[in-house]
Each structure stands twice: as C-alpha cells, then as structure tokens.
Picture 1: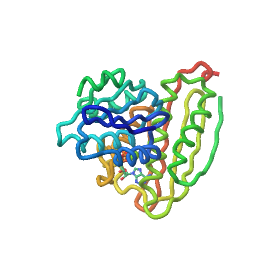
Picture 2: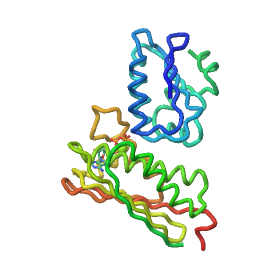
Picture 3: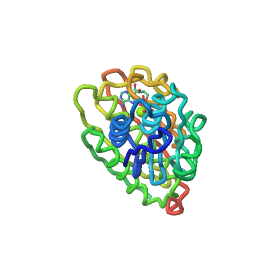
Length: 109
Length: 144
Ligand SMILES: Nc1ncnc2c1ncn2[C@@H]1O[C@H](COP(=O)(O)OP(=O)(O)OP(=O)(O)O)[C@@H](O)[C@H]1O
Ligand SMILES: [Mg+2]
C-alpha cells in the first residue's frame, strides 16, 4: 500500500493484497494525509489487489467526493475480476475510467 | 460429504481477513472454482464486517462463525450478540446504511444476496443477529 503524488495534481493510491474494512481505514488515513488543496485527480492502482468488499467501495467513494467538486477525474488501474465485479455492483464504474497502467491513466487527466 | 466447524473470535477488524481465510480453507474440500470461492469469501467478509462495525457500538464483543458442508452445499453462519436490527427488510434494501456519517455504501446485504444462493437473517432489537449464507458448489468432489 502506498500513496504518492504524480503530475497533473494527481494522487496515486496503490492498494495491494486485500481491501476490507481493516485495510481501508489505513489507506483512507494515508490518502487524506497526502491530499492537498491542489489535488484534483485520483488514480487507484488496483493491479495487485486480490480482494475487495463494500468497505473498499465506501473508501473509494469517500475519496472521490473530495475531488468531485473540483471537477477532477477518478481512474482505476487494472482491477482483477473479483474487484471489477464489486466495482460494477456499485455506481463507481459510471464515474471512473478503467486503464491498464498508470501511464495511460495519467494521459486521461 | 458432510463436515462442520464452529469457532468464536473477538470482533476486531484484524479478524475480518482471518474469517475469510477460515471459510476459504474449509470450502477448499469441495474443490471450488476460483470464482465460487471469491464469491463466498466476499459474502462472509460482508457479514463479519457488519458484526464488527454495527453490532457492538460500545465495546467489541464476540462473533461466532460456523460452517457446515452437506453434499455440495456450504452453509456459513455468522452471529453476534450485539444491538440487533430493528427492521431487517429495510436493512436489506440496496444502498441502505444505518451509518450515513461513515463512508459506507449500504451494499453489504446486496453483495451477500447476489454472491450466495440464499441468505437468511434473524435479528431483533437487542437480540443480536444471525446470518446464514447458503451456497451450492459445482465442484466435482461435492457429489461424493
Ligand atoms: N450484525 C449487525 N448488527 C446490527 N446492525 C446491522 C448488522 N448488520 C447490518 N446491520 C444494519 O444493516 C445496515 C445495512 O447493512 P449493509 O451491510 O447492507 O450496509 P452497511 O454495512 O451500512 O454498508 P457497507 O456494507 O456497504 O459498508 C447497516 O448499516 C446496519 O444498520
Ligand atoms: Mg455492511
């Protein structure tokens, strides 16, 4: 798990392993620490995420709300099938773009 | 085949992954597909997280997890002794959350329903909550 700042006022949140209520709390804290006034876009790198449940959806939506007002973009990188299915059950797929890697994701900003 | 287990753990968030792992190991006996296993693990995670997040607002209490295999069907029961649910039908509605102030999507029950063959919820205010997830597996060993 890591949170880094990238070009175009983008926060890159990398979650690996399993994203549940327990691990979502840690990511939320780190992401909000790194979040600054000029943060406009968020990339979730889920390429190494093997599991997610509804607590992950809540964490994603909570971060999205922070950039929504600014007209920022939400991009999810390379979700595996289980993770993609959970994303599809929520409204997130209609607001997020899916890209195969971070480079492509940054191009969408 | 027939099999069962019973266990109890304290309702702390560290035990969410533990509960999923126990259920996955138990169910492995039925030779499930990757997808079947992912579905059951996700449903279990929802029920266990609810017991940890919603059942004990004051102090964390115990969560009971038990499993039964009957033929190619797995029954997983998650129970708590917490505050209970006043209106179960309402709680099961998609997007309903009793904690709108937290970052919750209100999709836990919907995920349990779509990833299992059936779910039963027994609860009442002050009476704790019992959730049973039932899932049939197509794996070959289940037929024995
Ligand atoms: N074990 C429980 N004890 C007490 N209340 C519960 C329990 N399980 C569920 N509830 C109630 O039912 C509501 C709906 O549960 P559900 O899992 O669908 O959504 P959520 O937990 O609020 O959000 P999400 O699961 O998407 O994070 C909860 O908000 C809570 O009020
Ligand atoms: Mg829930």
